[in-house]
Structures are given as structure tokens and as C-alpha cells.
Length: 263
Image 1 (cartoon, one colour):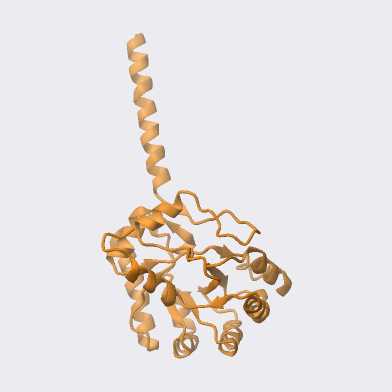
Image 2: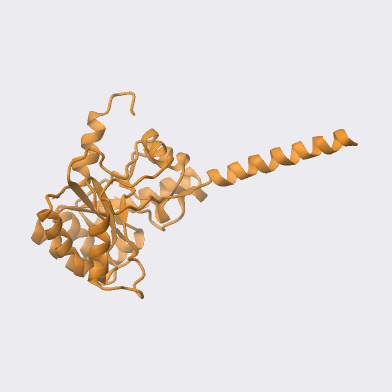
């Protein structure tokens, strides 16, 4: 009887251990440890996972460079203003867009490309990639890429930002196999709730407090706060010696410099 109890206990421990591991492996939600020391934020185990799969969240060169990125799922009327600022300040950006955005804001997609910005892939329907198979993920990415190519001069997309920031080793590998590079972020603010905007000073302070060399900044273009703060953010960061560059200036250069065996 005692042997049966021990055997049963071992079985259940093994069962729950395996299932806990599988559940935990389904997906990670991207995040970082915020600091106000103007240092690259720590991301724990995520750093090695990204390195192993050729993904990025920051430029670790130590140079005072900044990479502006925006996530665009729908239009709230502020993107034209954002583009005006970027044009005036001669700052490049990457816009990660969804299928809904491409279909509803065709003129803005065209303007982004014509003014030298990069369109990134945020998927067509915005699903959690860690809950779908490779075929669905491929369809989401390719459909978005085709939609962008139909309305602009950009015919292919190199960068992907996973919906909801969800990822795991499998989705990173699938993206690589499909020809995409994952780009996360090292600086973000709570800015997506259009019914809870806090004023331009909030957006400005949040960015300036977290800024660090090599930052990949994530902003949402639906935020009125961001639109109103952007010019001040750019101008003041320039005064502090920061240079704004395109993801191509960093990621493609880094890929070329890597040894053939990777990281």
C-alpha cells in the first residue's frame, strides 16, 4: 500500500511538472525592468532567448542613438501630426501596422513610405502568435505584407512586432524561417488608452526619465499625448546628444557584422 501511494505521488508530481512546464512555454509577454538611471533595462532570460533567435529590443553599442517605432492598429487622427513632426525634425521611424490600419488609412501608409519611414509587420488580424500554428502565423504576416505592397512603394517587410508582445522560442524561429526579424522595445509608456490621456507632459516625462543609449522606443500613434509631446522629446534629446536613426541603420548593420555561426 505504501509503495502504491509513493508511486502514485511520483506520477502526479511528474504529471503536474510537465504540464506546468508546457503551460509556461506557450508564451512570454514582453517586458523589461524599468530604471531612471538612463541605462539599458534588464530583461532577464529574455535577453538570451532573443540573442539565440536573432531578435532585438535594444542597440547595445553604447552609442547615444534612438530608434523611434510606433504601433498602429487603428487611426485616431494624430498620425498626420506625428508625421509632420518627423518630417520637420528629419527623424526616421518604423510604423508597425495591422491589416485594419492598412485598409482604413491607406493614404497614411503611402505617406509614411514616401517620406522615408519603414512599415513593420504587426500582423493582419492581431492574434497572439503563441496560440496559433506556423501556417496561421505565415498567413497573418504575408497577408499584411501584400496589403502594404498594394498601397505603397514598399514591397517587402523585414521587421515584425508580435501582437500583444507575446512570443516564445517557436514563434521567433518561425519568423526567422519566414524571413522576418523580431523587434521588441526597451522603452514604452502607458499611452494606448485613448480615454485616459494624461497630457503631453506625462508622455514627455516618461520618455525622458527612461531614455538610454540605444533605446528602441515604442509609442502608440493613437495617443494625443504622444502627438503633442513628440516635437519636444525629439528636440530635447538632440540637445542631450542623441541621434535618431532608422532600424535599418542598426539591425541590418548588426546582421552583416555577425559571424556566420550567429551569436
